[in-house]
Image (cartoon, rainbow, N blue to C red; front, top):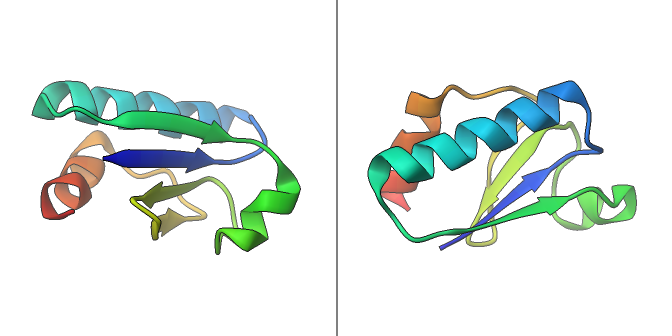
Length: 78
């Protein structure tokens, strides 16, 4: 599983990355977590508002800070 955390590196983006890593840890799944900080890549990936989360090429969250439980929910269904 490939999880991309999309954002410029602000405090909100850092929180989302921490939540993603915690969700992956709690679920005990194998996932590659990548930070995408290049603004030019945001629109290409379909993220108009940051922070965003993309799982295996599909935008799952954009413009909000999802909780660990919300992230676990999308990871279980992916």
